[in-house]
Image: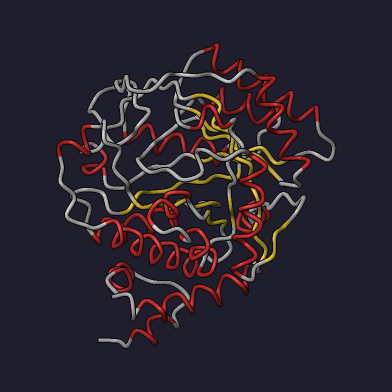
Amino acid sequence: MEKIEDVLKKDSFNKEDIIRLLSLDQDESKMLYLRSKEIKEKYVGNKVYLRGLIEFSNICAKDCLYCGIRKSNDTYDRYNLQNEDILEAVKFAKEAKYGSVVLQSGELESPAFTERVETLVQQISDAFDPKLGITLSCGEQSEETYRRWKNAGADRYLLRIETSNEELYYRIHPRDPKHSFQNRLAALERLKKLGYQTGTGIMVGLPTQTIEDIADDILFMQKYDMDMCGIGPYIESENTPLAQDFENPMSLDDRFHLALKTISIIRIMMKDVNIAASTALQSIDKVGREKAINVAANIFMPNITPTENRKEYLLYDNKPCIDESASECQSCVIGRIALTGNEVAYDELGTSKHYERRMAKK
């Protein structure tokens, strides 16, 4: 069997290599983290790009079995921010020198929702010069809807697959027309076709998920040539079927370290992609996002959703920063990034270098 040091010298990994690296204990993982940090500094540098996150609606037509804002969960008050409130949050992001914003919501497909997001994106595009980067995370849509949103000014899109294993997908989603694994994959293809910077992501530590599944997920993201990746540990949401019906044998601490190993492997294999330091990491470890930045991540997403709405957008339990104002989050983020020795990239779009390289080939 190859030494870990020799495996880590490779430019890319096969499935067996990935499984071995995912199986490293915490002490052995230090070698993996050192290698991914080297790759990160070589290909994307030590800048951390800021994306102001606006969770503008928790209304969702889907019923994913793991998600706190699933349609059937009646423990939350549903909200839909007015465009004026969203634009005020975007104004804060601009003044705070965040280079871009992320507009995230529950998944809806309707002419009214399409038009609402189109109008919102157009208003943001028209209001600020130089322009902010606009990332959308609004679920599966038709090609025409994606096209309209892009023409209005959105340039990035995040659509998490959660798992590339179709069988596991249907263990964590209802098996009905609204929840289709193949439709999810087709939506990713539409986004790439239209020229979006395209991102996806997975949860690690799901009930019944295996190390082999995660290895396949990493290879999936490489094969699909993703520009952005978001990896988070699965954290239960108490009012969901997945939390109630499955006792997860993996501890939160183990899920945290598995997520760190996953993003490190992605950094080594995909080199110049943007990788987010997910909020869920901080839910388990108070300095979880800093640890992610230290080893692989280069994107930090401060929450700028109005404070009064944050408690109604809990995808999982113990979500951090729900009582802080946008300005308090700003101060916290700057301090957190400073602790890592990385540089805050003020007023920079943070366009994925992988995306730039991918588009140059066309």
